[in-house]
Amino acid sequence: MKTWLYHLQVNVSDTKVSFPFYKDFFSNLGYRIMEEGDDHLGITNGTTDFWIIQTEAEYKSHGFHRKNTGLNHLSFMVESKEAVDVFHKGFLESRKIPTLYQTPRLFPEYGEGYYAVFFEDPDRMKLEVTYKP
Image (cartoon, rainbow, N blue to C red; front, side, top):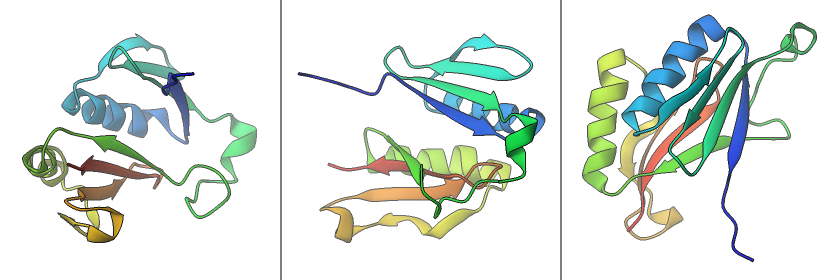
């Protein structure tokens, strides 16, 4: 059986902050908006869909931390090391979004040529843009 990730839902604490971030982020990666409402945002690249959803009030007090059980981070593969650098300069630096782990840089412990930049979304979920030959 062949499989691939069809969609992923990310709950956010404040759509006024997270929607602009994710619209801009996904646009930089070649995704497009397929649906948008006050409490949801659907984004696709034609293969994988992301749904950015407002967290219900009764669950907001728990907050997010990537070290808790559940999702730790999302990694997006790009076609070259240069594409990681272009994303870093064009998206992260231009918006003054800090990177994690002194990135972008090579991570030989993850495989030969593994090159990535790590950063966080407005709720501090870790995101990664990666090249691996």
